[in-house]
Amino acid sequence: MCTLKAMSRIAFVFICIFHGNIFAQNNNRQAVNDVLDPSQTVHLKGYLADKLSDCLNNRILVQDADRLIEPFKPANRTETRQWQSEFWGKWFMSAVLAYKYYPDARLKKVLDHAVSGLLATQTPDGYIGNYAADHRLEQWDIWGRKYCMLGLLAYYDITKDKKSLTGATRIADNLLSDLHKKDGIIVTKGNFRGMAASSVLEPVCLLYKYTGSRKYLDFALEIVRQWETPEGPHLISKASVNVGARFPKPKNWYSPEQGQKAYEMMSCYEGLIELYRLTGNESYKKAAEETWKNIRDTEINIVGSGASAEMWFGGKAIQTNPIVHYQETCVTVTWLKFTEQLLRLTGEAKYADEAERTYYNALLASMSGHGTSWAKYTPLNGQRLPGSQQCEMGLNCCEANGPRGLFNIPMHMVMERKEGLQVNYFADGTFKLKSPQGNNVTLTQHTGYPKTGIIDMDIDFQKPEDLAIKIRIPGWSKNTKLSVNGIAVNNVQPGQYATIKRTWKTGDKISLELDMRGRVIETGISNRSIAIMRGPIVLARDARFEGAGIEAVLKPVTDSNSHIELSEISNNTADDVYMLFKAKFIPESYTENAKGPVSITLCDYASAGNGHESSFYKVWTAQLFNPGAN
Image 1 (cartoon, helix red, strand yellow):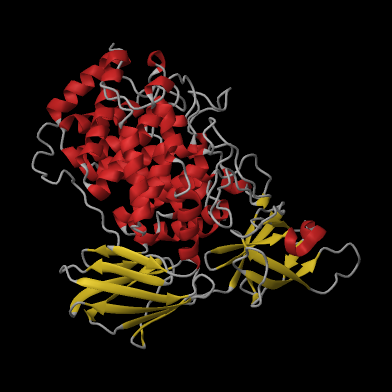
Image 2: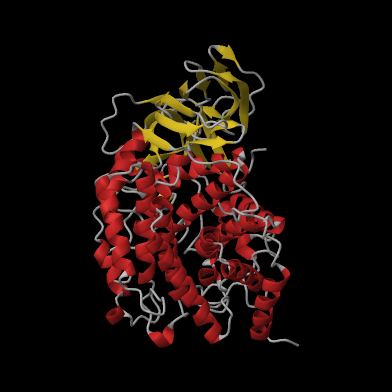
């Protein structure tokens, strides 16, 4: 019987021979193209524009890039177990996404300096990292190399600077060399059944896309083959298994045997989607889609994130409980990125629905009021606190990574597709795109969404053109009105895209009115709890507005369809609060007759506990158990 090491070497040769001609005819090196392409340029106004500006100015631009580069210098390569080498790449990719949205000269100067500084640390063998020579490939070393490659490739994507591409190829070649010298097995390196190390699949696929060098495609295919070996994470064969139960619980939570590590798992699937784009192998797409669905159905909570102490654990069903180290921001960001990958690939509404919920709730909630810091963990009931410094780097992983989620959405709000345009998200702003015939199109949204459900869109065409515009109807909007130039569009379905095909010309107007009634969300049976949503926004009670009464048990006053009346507080002067409402609830009563309804203040989850001083807040309110009820 072949050993894993021998099988690995045989597989490399086999892959090169067997697949040698499969992709030869694909000159653009992709077998599958995305259904959606991003806007050419985006300019937002209002709430989201302010959040993006705050993050750019108060987090991204104030970061000392030289401090992030310091660990890579040859004199400092003494590490044996920590993850300093990820911070440069996470922060840098955040900065690149910010530059795509807002091509600011200050930011470009920062990017140029950060790339030249990193490349200056590359040794003759191609290594960029901070691990001691006899500890390479261990712990977080390959993970750090991945982030350096991703950052350099992101820079190449916006500049076409060959030095950054060459730097990334040399990192990859050095990794291949180091693996060959060791044993050729990547899934036994580091922790979490090789998921952290083998998530390098993503930049390896991008290297093949950019260079056409066959060795990178072969490397990518070998990584995926090793996933299915006994030591691997079985990301293909276990795609239909609950992500929180794919492997037995290990004795050590953070260990090589742990197969439920959320962030690293999703990072691997992002790489698998890139490999699907290159090969067209449907089993890769199926595995990514099945896993995404399972995460949504078993892990993702009401605000759009999950994981406890960074692992999947079947958390959706018990989200009303106090949970240790709940929804790490890196998990939130990667769930959002994974979801956006599938949206680009398929154009399906379910991905946009989930991404919107995550973005407005879990992600924005983890960002401090003016973008200076990001929470490491964000509970549903509790306090929102900044994370601790990691690896003596002056920041933690979530502060480096959070902005990458924030700047991921803007260019995907309105997108191009071969039949026309697709409106995925709603925000006040202007979106410039290309039509299927290559003409310039400007779509402008006028809206206060998500405070309001009214969105008016003006369209400016270079010349009239026959095409389809698809408008997302959120799954929560049960009563929706859609019209073009005042004429109603019929058969509008929640959770689908409404397709409007016609000859469009400058001056045409689309009007959309979404159902913004307050919704009561209920979970549990013997331990019933309720939460309130309005549009995509989860609402919360905050001790800033209730004092000691936040622990009171309250029953919402609803109509027959479980809608609750929400009265907006228009003269909102509360500290750092975006939305503020009053709603009626019946308080708990231990007398024979309950008291009448009381008025309770609710704010948006992103603002809850997020003022200048930390306050307690809660999303879920427990309901009285009544054994006599039906």
